[in-house]
Image 1 (cartoon, rainbow, N blue to C red):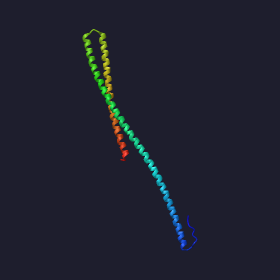
Image 2 (cartoon, one colour; image 1 turned 45 degrees about the horizontal axis):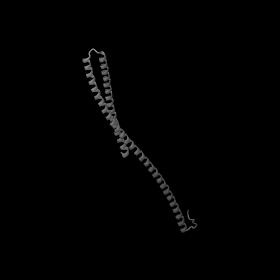
Image 3 (cartoon, one colour; image 1 turned 120 degrees about the vertical axis):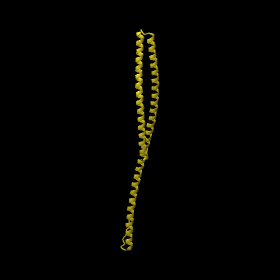
Image 4 (cartoon, rainbow, N blue to C red; image 1 turned 120 degrees about the horizontal axis):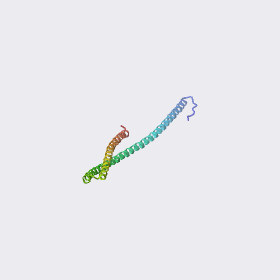
Length: 169
């Protein structure tokens, strides 16, 4: 909106200069308004991105906590399993000693009795199988301990990677 200037003198020149200044000011204000809208839009997008990053970071932290908790549970279960295996091993060894003693006593008491000897031989065979089974269980326990250690190392690595992402460095 500009003023109508009909004069050709200094007043007319002043009016035309004033109209030109107003038009320049209008264009400048329009540019500032557009820039302000762009900045506001960018700020809203940045805020949304920040919220999304915060949610993702929290999810990663919760996942790390769950992994740590599960690793501790696995380690406790492995220790309990190992204790049980050791108890079974001790019981089998005691049983093996008793079986051996029983076989010796039976052979001394009834050397001519095949039935008794065959029975003891079967007991001995079963004892050997149990001893082999305990040996297999011990091997599994050792492998499980190695897997647990590996899981703990991987969890620690994951924790270190998580810290790097979280803390920006």
